[in-house]
Length: 344
Ligand code: 26A
Image 1: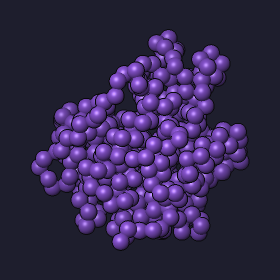
Image 2: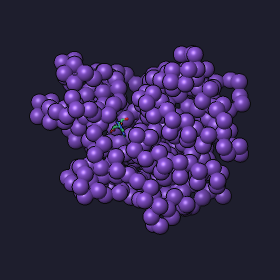
Image 3: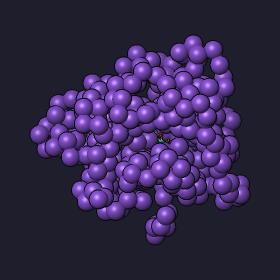
Protein backbone atom coordinates (compact mmCIF):
# COMPACT_ATOMS: atom_id res chain seq x y z
CA UNK A 1 0.00 0.00 0.00
CA UNK A 2 1.25 3.47 -0.78
CA UNK A 3 2.44 5.49 2.20
CA UNK A 4 0.13 8.21 3.44
CA UNK A 5 2.72 9.95 5.60
CA UNK A 6 3.48 13.64 5.40
CA UNK A 7 6.99 14.93 4.68
CA UNK A 8 8.27 11.75 3.11
CA UNK A 9 11.14 13.61 1.42
CA UNK A 10 13.68 15.49 3.54
CA UNK A 11 16.23 17.77 1.83
CA UNK A 12 19.31 19.54 3.19
CA UNK A 13 21.55 22.25 1.81
CA UNK A 14 22.11 26.00 1.53
CA UNK A 15 19.13 28.36 1.20
CA UNK A 16 20.15 31.30 -0.97
CA UNK A 17 18.56 34.26 -2.62
CA UNK A 18 19.51 34.50 -6.26
CA UNK A 19 20.39 37.96 -7.55
CA UNK A 20 20.01 37.25 -11.22
CA UNK A 21 20.56 39.41 -14.27
CA UNK A 22 21.38 39.14 -17.93
CA UNK A 23 25.03 40.08 -18.22
CA UNK A 24 27.72 40.27 -20.86
CA UNK A 25 31.33 39.31 -21.52
CA UNK A 26 32.57 42.48 -19.85
CA UNK A 27 30.78 41.62 -16.61
CA UNK A 28 32.13 38.07 -16.60
CA UNK A 29 35.60 39.40 -17.22
CA UNK A 30 35.35 42.06 -14.54
CA UNK A 31 34.89 39.36 -11.89
CA UNK A 32 36.96 36.64 -13.65
CA UNK A 33 33.91 34.40 -14.04
CA UNK A 34 33.45 31.54 -16.51
CA UNK A 35 30.26 31.71 -18.56
CA UNK A 36 28.96 28.45 -17.06
CA UNK A 37 30.14 27.78 -13.54
CA UNK A 38 29.35 27.85 -9.83
CA UNK A 39 31.88 29.16 -7.33
CA UNK A 40 32.18 30.53 -3.82
CA UNK A 41 32.69 34.30 -3.71
CA UNK A 42 36.17 35.53 -2.83
CA UNK A 43 37.37 39.01 -1.94
CA UNK A 44 37.47 40.07 -5.59
CA UNK A 45 33.78 39.20 -6.07
CA UNK A 46 32.42 41.33 -3.23
CA UNK A 47 31.07 44.07 -5.48
CA UNK A 48 29.13 41.79 -7.81
CA UNK A 49 25.83 41.80 -5.91
CA UNK A 50 25.53 45.59 -5.84
CA UNK A 51 26.75 45.76 -9.43
CA UNK A 52 24.04 43.34 -10.59
CA UNK A 53 21.33 45.20 -8.69
CA UNK A 54 22.40 48.70 -9.65
CA UNK A 55 23.66 48.30 -13.20
CA UNK A 56 22.03 45.19 -14.59
CA UNK A 57 18.45 45.37 -13.32
CA UNK A 58 18.88 42.14 -11.34
CA UNK A 59 15.86 40.27 -10.02
CA UNK A 60 15.64 38.66 -6.58
CA UNK A 61 14.56 35.04 -6.91
CA UNK A 62 14.44 32.20 -4.37
CA UNK A 63 17.39 29.88 -5.00
CA UNK A 64 19.76 27.49 -3.29
CA UNK A 65 20.17 24.37 -5.38
CA UNK A 66 18.53 21.76 -3.13
CA UNK A 67 15.85 24.22 -2.07
CA UNK A 68 14.96 24.52 -5.76
CA UNK A 69 14.91 20.72 -5.93
CA UNK A 70 12.70 20.53 -2.83
CA UNK A 71 10.24 23.04 -4.32
CA UNK A 72 10.33 21.02 -7.52
CA UNK A 73 9.56 17.71 -5.86
CA UNK A 74 6.73 19.35 -3.90
CA UNK A 75 5.41 20.74 -7.20
CA UNK A 76 4.64 17.19 -8.31
CA UNK A 77 3.92 15.40 -5.02
CA UNK A 78 0.75 15.70 -2.89
CA UNK A 79 0.61 18.59 -0.37
CA UNK A 80 2.91 18.35 2.69
CA UNK A 81 5.34 15.91 1.08
CA UNK A 82 8.65 17.75 1.33
CA UNK A 83 10.61 19.40 4.13
CA UNK A 84 13.85 21.32 3.66
CA UNK A 85 16.63 22.19 6.13
CA UNK A 86 19.29 24.89 5.90
CA UNK A 87 20.56 28.10 7.47
CA UNK A 88 19.30 31.67 6.92
CA UNK A 89 19.60 35.05 8.61
CA UNK A 90 16.87 37.19 10.10
CA UNK A 91 16.51 39.73 7.30
CA UNK A 92 14.49 40.78 4.27
CA UNK A 93 16.11 38.17 2.05
CA UNK A 94 14.99 35.41 4.42
CA UNK A 95 11.49 36.91 4.26
CA UNK A 96 11.55 36.60 0.45
CA UNK A 97 12.57 32.95 0.78
CA UNK A 98 9.75 32.32 3.25
CA UNK A 99 7.23 33.81 0.80
CA UNK A 100 8.53 31.70 -2.08
CA UNK A 101 8.50 28.40 -0.21
CA UNK A 102 5.07 29.16 1.18
CA UNK A 103 3.72 29.65 -2.32
CA UNK A 104 5.36 26.37 -3.33
CA UNK A 105 3.87 24.51 -0.37
CA UNK A 106 7.35 23.58 0.83
CA UNK A 107 7.90 23.23 4.57
CA UNK A 108 11.20 24.71 5.68
CA UNK A 109 12.92 24.31 9.03
CA UNK A 110 15.63 26.93 8.87
CA UNK A 111 18.39 27.43 11.40
CA UNK A 112 18.07 31.18 11.89
CA UNK A 113 21.30 33.02 12.67
CA UNK A 114 20.58 36.49 14.07
CA UNK A 115 24.11 37.70 13.35
CA UNK A 116 24.62 36.55 9.76
CA UNK A 117 23.01 37.69 6.52
CA UNK A 118 21.00 35.27 4.39
CA UNK A 119 23.18 33.77 1.66
CA UNK A 120 23.23 35.33 -1.80
CA UNK A 121 24.05 33.94 -5.19
CA UNK A 122 24.94 36.33 -8.00
CA UNK A 123 23.73 34.79 -11.24
CA UNK A 124 24.99 36.17 -14.54
CA UNK A 125 23.03 34.97 -17.53
CA UNK A 126 24.72 35.08 -20.93
CA UNK A 127 22.77 33.27 -23.61
CA UNK A 128 21.98 29.77 -22.36
CA UNK A 129 24.82 29.86 -19.85
CA UNK A 130 24.68 30.87 -16.21
CA UNK A 131 27.57 31.82 -13.97
CA UNK A 132 26.94 31.68 -10.23
CA UNK A 133 28.93 33.30 -7.48
CA UNK A 134 27.80 32.54 -3.94
CA UNK A 135 28.32 34.21 -0.62
CA UNK A 136 26.95 31.65 1.83
CA UNK A 137 26.46 33.94 4.84
CA UNK A 138 24.09 32.32 7.34
CA UNK A 139 23.85 29.17 5.20
CA UNK A 140 27.48 28.51 6.15
CA UNK A 141 26.49 28.22 9.80
CA UNK A 142 24.15 25.27 9.52
CA UNK A 143 25.18 22.78 12.20
CA UNK A 144 24.62 19.38 13.71
CA UNK A 145 23.01 20.97 16.72
CA UNK A 146 20.09 22.12 14.58
CA UNK A 147 19.72 18.73 12.90
CA UNK A 148 19.72 16.98 16.29
CA UNK A 149 17.03 19.17 17.87
CA UNK A 150 14.28 16.75 18.90
CA UNK A 151 11.65 18.37 16.65
CA UNK A 152 13.99 18.33 13.63
CA UNK A 153 15.34 14.85 14.23
CA UNK A 154 11.73 13.62 14.46
CA UNK A 155 11.28 14.86 10.86
CA UNK A 156 14.46 13.00 9.88
CA UNK A 157 13.18 9.77 11.41
CA UNK A 158 9.78 10.22 9.80
CA UNK A 159 11.14 10.82 6.28
CA UNK A 160 11.35 7.97 3.80
CA UNK A 161 13.80 9.49 1.31
CA UNK A 162 16.73 11.90 1.83
CA UNK A 163 18.09 14.36 -0.69
CA UNK A 164 21.34 16.22 -0.03
CA UNK A 165 22.82 18.84 -2.31
CA UNK A 166 26.58 18.38 -2.67
CA UNK A 167 27.12 22.10 -2.14
CA UNK A 168 26.55 21.33 1.53
CA UNK A 169 29.97 19.64 1.68
CA UNK A 170 31.38 23.15 2.00
CA UNK A 171 29.20 23.73 5.06
CA UNK A 172 28.50 20.77 7.35
CA UNK A 173 29.68 17.30 6.27
CA UNK A 174 28.76 15.82 9.68
CA UNK A 175 25.09 16.67 9.06
CA UNK A 176 25.30 14.96 5.66
CA UNK A 177 26.82 11.88 7.25
CA UNK A 178 24.08 11.74 9.89
CA UNK A 179 21.42 11.62 7.19
CA UNK A 180 23.43 9.16 5.11
CA UNK A 181 23.81 6.76 8.02
CA UNK A 182 20.19 7.14 9.04
CA UNK A 183 19.20 6.19 5.48
CA UNK A 184 21.42 3.11 5.32
CA UNK A 185 20.47 1.89 8.80
CA UNK A 186 16.79 1.98 7.87
CA UNK A 187 17.09 0.94 4.22
CA UNK A 188 15.75 4.29 3.00
CA UNK A 189 17.04 5.84 -0.25
CA UNK A 190 19.71 8.52 0.05
CA UNK A 191 20.05 10.77 -2.99
CA UNK A 192 23.12 12.94 -3.50
CA UNK A 193 23.68 15.64 -6.09
CA UNK A 194 27.27 16.31 -7.19
CA UNK A 195 26.20 19.98 -7.51
CA UNK A 196 29.23 21.58 -9.19
CA UNK A 197 32.69 20.69 -10.49
CA UNK A 198 34.42 22.42 -7.57
CA UNK A 199 32.87 20.00 -5.08
CA UNK A 200 34.60 16.95 -6.59
CA UNK A 201 37.78 19.00 -7.02
CA UNK A 202 38.13 20.71 -3.66
CA UNK A 203 35.83 18.79 -1.32
CA UNK A 204 36.93 15.33 -2.39
CA UNK A 205 37.47 13.89 1.09
CA UNK A 206 34.04 14.61 2.59
CA UNK A 207 32.45 13.69 -0.75
CA UNK A 208 34.22 10.33 -0.75
CA UNK A 209 33.33 9.68 2.89
CA UNK A 210 29.66 9.90 1.94
CA UNK A 211 29.95 7.86 -1.26
CA UNK A 212 29.24 4.43 0.28
CA UNK A 213 25.84 5.79 1.33
CA UNK A 214 24.67 7.06 -2.06
CA UNK A 215 21.71 5.09 -3.38
CA UNK A 216 21.25 7.60 -6.18
CA UNK A 217 23.93 10.02 -7.34
CA UNK A 218 22.90 12.75 -9.74
CA UNK A 219 25.16 15.05 -11.73
CA UNK A 220 25.69 16.66 -15.09
CA UNK A 221 28.41 16.03 -17.64
CA UNK A 222 30.82 18.67 -16.31
CA UNK A 223 30.44 17.43 -12.74
CA UNK A 224 31.04 13.87 -13.95
CA UNK A 225 34.20 15.03 -15.74
CA UNK A 226 35.44 16.86 -12.63
CA UNK A 227 34.81 13.73 -10.56
CA UNK A 228 36.72 11.59 -13.06
CA UNK A 229 39.64 13.97 -13.01
CA UNK A 230 39.91 14.38 -9.25
CA UNK A 231 39.62 10.60 -8.82
CA UNK A 232 42.11 9.82 -11.62
CA UNK A 233 39.63 7.62 -13.44
CA UNK A 234 41.65 8.14 -16.62
CA UNK A 235 38.61 8.70 -18.83
CA UNK A 236 36.41 11.50 -20.11
CA UNK A 237 33.77 9.09 -21.40
CA UNK A 238 30.63 10.05 -19.48
CA UNK A 239 29.18 6.54 -19.70
CA UNK A 240 32.32 5.05 -18.20
CA UNK A 241 32.25 7.64 -15.42
CA UNK A 242 28.57 6.91 -14.71
CA UNK A 243 29.43 3.22 -14.41
CA UNK A 244 32.34 3.96 -12.08
CA UNK A 245 30.05 6.00 -9.82
CA UNK A 246 27.42 3.26 -9.78
CA UNK A 247 29.98 0.63 -8.83
CA UNK A 248 31.76 2.36 -5.94
CA UNK A 249 31.65 0.33 -2.71
CA UNK A 250 28.25 0.51 -1.04
CA UNK A 251 27.15 0.37 2.59
CA UNK A 252 23.52 -0.68 2.18
CA UNK A 253 23.68 -3.76 -0.01
CA UNK A 254 19.89 -4.07 -0.10
CA UNK A 255 19.78 -1.41 -2.82
CA UNK A 256 21.82 -1.22 -5.99
CA UNK A 257 23.33 2.19 -6.58
CA UNK A 258 22.06 4.17 -9.54
CA UNK A 259 24.10 6.98 -11.15
CA UNK A 260 22.18 9.51 -13.24
CA UNK A 261 24.09 11.94 -15.46
CA UNK A 262 22.27 14.69 -17.33
CA UNK A 263 23.83 16.27 -20.40
CA UNK A 264 21.72 19.28 -21.31
CA UNK A 265 19.83 18.43 -24.48
CA UNK A 266 21.84 15.23 -24.95
CA UNK A 267 20.37 12.01 -23.54
CA UNK A 268 20.28 11.43 -19.77
CA UNK A 269 22.51 8.49 -18.83
CA UNK A 270 21.64 5.93 -16.17
CA UNK A 271 24.10 3.35 -14.83
CA UNK A 272 23.02 0.71 -12.33
CA UNK A 273 25.46 -1.05 -10.01
CA UNK A 274 26.47 -4.43 -11.42
CA UNK A 275 24.82 -3.86 -14.79
CA UNK A 276 26.79 -3.70 -18.00
CA UNK A 277 24.53 -1.47 -20.04
CA UNK A 278 24.31 2.28 -19.45
CA UNK A 279 20.80 3.32 -20.44
CA UNK A 280 20.10 6.49 -22.42
CA UNK A 281 16.95 8.58 -22.08
CA UNK A 282 16.58 11.20 -24.83
CA UNK A 283 15.52 14.71 -23.86
CA UNK A 284 12.48 16.22 -25.54
CA UNK A 285 13.91 19.50 -26.71
CA UNK A 286 11.95 22.71 -26.77
CA UNK A 287 12.70 25.51 -29.19
CA UNK A 288 15.43 27.97 -28.24
CA UNK A 289 12.88 30.81 -28.18
CA UNK A 290 10.94 29.08 -25.41
CA UNK A 291 13.95 29.07 -23.09
CA UNK A 292 14.02 31.87 -20.54
CA UNK A 293 17.21 30.83 -18.75
CA UNK A 294 18.83 27.58 -17.64
CA UNK A 295 19.45 28.60 -14.02
CA UNK A 296 18.05 25.73 -11.95
CA UNK A 297 17.51 23.25 -14.77
CA UNK A 298 19.56 20.58 -13.01
CA UNK A 299 17.82 21.23 -9.70
CA UNK A 300 14.44 20.86 -11.38
CA UNK A 301 15.54 17.58 -12.93
CA UNK A 302 16.58 16.32 -9.50
CA UNK A 303 13.24 17.45 -8.03
CA UNK A 304 11.21 15.58 -10.60
CA UNK A 305 13.44 12.53 -10.27
CA UNK A 306 13.20 12.54 -6.46
CA UNK A 307 9.41 12.77 -6.64
CA UNK A 308 9.44 9.52 -8.58
CA UNK A 309 11.69 7.80 -6.05
CA UNK A 310 9.42 8.96 -3.21
CA UNK A 311 6.43 7.41 -4.95
CA UNK A 312 8.28 4.18 -5.72
CA UNK A 313 8.23 4.74 -9.49
CA UNK A 314 10.62 3.10 -11.94
CA UNK A 315 13.89 4.73 -12.97
CA UNK A 316 12.39 5.39 -16.38
CA UNK A 317 9.38 7.19 -14.93
CA UNK A 318 11.54 9.10 -12.44
CA UNK A 319 13.89 10.30 -15.21
CA UNK A 320 10.89 11.30 -17.26
CA UNK A 321 9.54 13.35 -14.35
CA UNK A 322 12.94 15.02 -14.03
CA UNK A 323 13.09 15.92 -17.69
CA UNK A 324 9.50 17.18 -17.61
CA UNK A 325 10.13 19.49 -14.66
CA UNK A 326 13.45 20.77 -16.05
CA UNK A 327 11.66 21.62 -19.29
CA UNK A 328 9.08 23.66 -17.36
CA UNK A 329 11.71 25.41 -15.25
CA UNK A 330 13.90 26.66 -18.10
CA UNK A 331 10.86 28.47 -19.48
CA UNK A 332 10.60 30.49 -16.24
CA UNK A 333 12.80 33.25 -14.85
CA UNK A 334 15.49 31.60 -12.69
CA UNK A 335 14.97 28.37 -10.75
CA UNK A 336 11.18 28.63 -10.74
CA UNK A 337 8.15 26.58 -11.78
CA UNK A 338 5.02 27.77 -13.56
CA UNK A 339 2.00 28.84 -11.56
CA UNK A 340 -0.83 28.04 -11.90
CA UNK A 341 0.52 24.55 -11.63
CA UNK A 342 0.83 22.21 -14.55
CA UNK A 343 0.02 18.63 -13.69
CA UNK A 344 2.43 15.86 -14.50
C1 26A B 1 27.89 26.57 -1.89
N1 26A B 1 27.35 27.03 -3.15
C2 26A B 1 28.28 27.58 -4.08
C3 26A B 1 25.99 26.91 -3.41
C4 26A B 1 25.39 27.37 -4.61
C5 26A B 1 24.02 27.14 -4.78
N2 26A B 1 23.28 26.51 -3.87
C6 26A B 1 23.90 26.09 -2.77
N3 26A B 1 25.21 26.28 -2.51
N4 26A B 1 25.84 28.05 -5.69
C7 26A B 1 24.79 28.21 -6.51
N5 26A B 1 23.68 27.67 -5.96
C8 26A B 1 22.31 27.64 -6.46
O1 26A B 1 22.27 26.87 -7.60
C9 26A B 1 21.01 27.15 -8.18
C10 26A B 1 21.01 26.75 -9.62
O2 26A B 1 21.31 25.42 -9.78
C11 26A B 1 21.77 28.99 -6.86
O3 26A B 1 21.18 29.63 -5.78
C12 26A B 1 20.75 28.62 -7.95
O4 26A B 1 19.43 28.81 -7.52
